Image 1: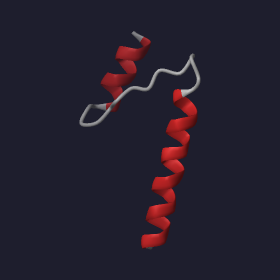
Image 2 (image 1 turned 90 degrees about the vertical axis):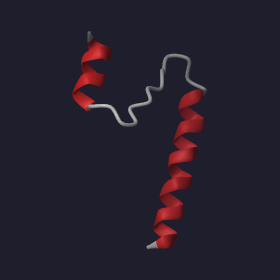
Image 3 (image 1 turned 180 degrees about the vertical axis):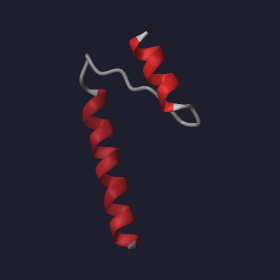
Image 4 (image 1 turned 60 degrees about the horizontal axis):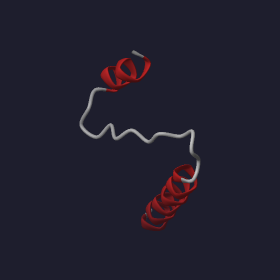
Length: 44
């Protein structure tokens, strides 16, 4: 289970690295926020 957790975290870090290089992608921190409120703000 620990190996799976480590590999998942590594994969997520690679995804973030890749997405940061795309100019059309804007990362949104949703930590502690209601997903519906975030969606409304983005689409709004």
